Amino acid sequence: MYSSLVRVQNTFGFFTTVVCVVAALIAATDFLAPRTPSVGVIKPTNVQVVKGRPHYYSPKKEEYAIIKFSLDADLSSLFTWNTKQLFVYVTAEWPSAPGQNATNQAVIWDSIITSPSADHLANLGPIAKKKLIRSAQGKSIDPSRGKLSIRNQRPKYQITHPSGKMAEIEDVVLRVHYNVQPWVGVLTWNQDTDFFKWKAIKKNVSKRFSLPAIKKREEGGARKIDASH
Amino acid sequence: MADQLLDQLRDVVEGKIDFEGQKLAERIVNFALSLVGAIAFLAGWLLQDIKLAVYLGLVGTAAVFLIVVPPWPFFNKNPINWLPVAVVAPPVNLVIDEKMLK
Image (cartoon, rainbow over all chains, first blue to last red; front, side):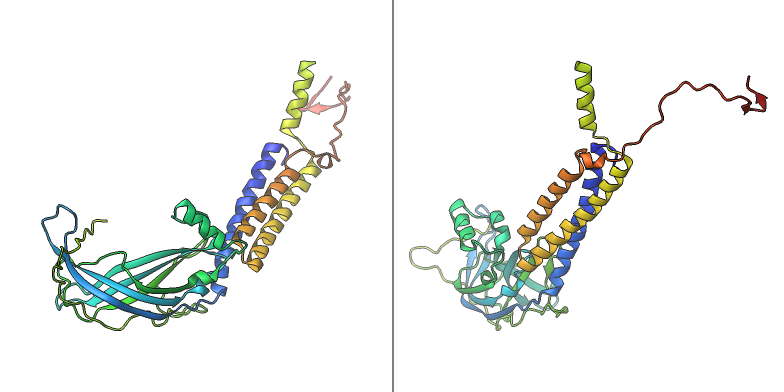
């Protein structure tokens, strides 16, 4: 510590140690915060199967399922001071034919819910972002953002299968998933059993339903699907 | 004149402090930075505000740098008093390598 340069180096060195310890403590506080996510409603509201192409010039025609759904969920307990953002997604799942791959699962919709501390990182236009930041002004956390109530939502992704066949599949369910992405600490992924104060998500699977037959071409031309994006 | 100024500038930039000052600086760094970390963590946790924790930590660390890095006078309160350079006559009967020094 005899010269200024050595004092700068020593102080910075100890600062990095303090940062590591504080970050570890912050990550540890996650385990003290109870998590009780629950789903009120997850159900398909309108299911269609249509013919489409994987991209514009593809000679191959495939069947695509378009599953509109309603979702009520209370994920507010997942928002603590260490939550950066919550990734919520809905998958459709159905059993495969005997002798085939064991699981069929495809994401039909997803959403990123930022915490107020991460609003500046949200992938939004300037006006929507300003509105988002203003919605949580003066709040360091905003658990009300975890309360979802979505009615008759169009899916973000139309889903298909390697076989190209989607029509008249039976025993399809919708399942709600979430990931908690913290500022520091562990990424929580597919927690399906209770873990101390973290309870597994409740009632996150819909009733079984069947996909309909392919929709007939309507008068005036059916809408074409381009699933390449 | 210019040499004198440059010497002064070099002393300020180098910022040497005495041994007692070095001990004090080390203690200040360890204690103050630990305190800043504890305050930042507790305040952030109690108020559930991670940005507050980050800002408290950074501002506190900057303050510690300001206290410790410049050679403040209180780090130089115990300067070492070197013996004066003196022409000393060699002592008589000094034995080196079993030879008597004349």
